[in-house]
Image 1 (cartoon, one colour):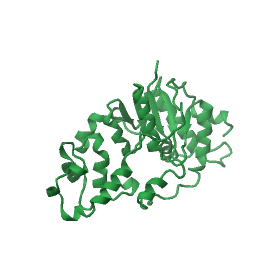
Image 2: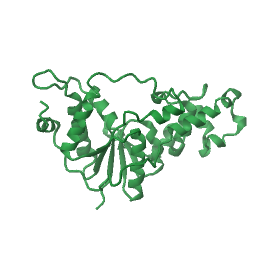
Image 3: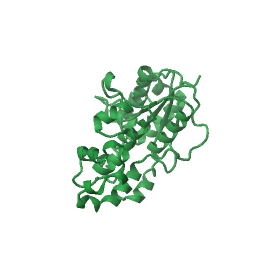
Image 4: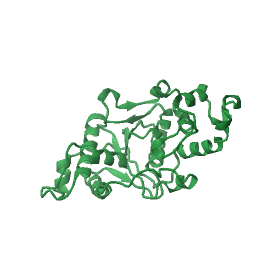
Length: 275
């Protein structure tokens, strides 16, 4: 039997773990903050229990130089993001050790953003007939929902709102999933410091992309002169927003075998002597 696949955006989950607990999780001597690795392990186990029993779970991390290729197209790409809080990135090594201990496979591919690696792995899994869930809050993944067997999972929401699938996109945003890069190129993406075209918000972008149009198909008569001067930049932004589904990756990353039940976060820290 081929297991369904849960792909986890690793940096998203670590960030949520670090900031998502009401109090810090400290070592027993109260000197070392273990919130990152504890929270990551706890949230991942909870996701498996509630949503991914019998799934293969695979975690993907951004590489340190992952955004360089897109930044080469636009130097403002992600330039607004602050440096991580001390201790957050230091937790990453412990998280990877915890994944190794629990038998969860993971990758941090040199020169690659997690988005592109996840898009490639999702595409490969779908080619094998596997259903795919992606645990993230990154809206760039909406473009992958053009495949009805791919869903986004956000366990931070109430249970009935946790999944986003293809059928939700048009009613919510006024565009199809496959139009997402065009939509965001027009209206902008603050998370990645892509400003969009001045004067175009979500409603105007959806109107311009009505009936499945792409940037190339929008009649010139519907564009204000000031917009046309930014059109070459919008085309560049669209290419930056598009996910690469053919990223070069090592062979046989995915096993199609269900991940064994995960231990509690406390057991993980005990096993790794992190208390």
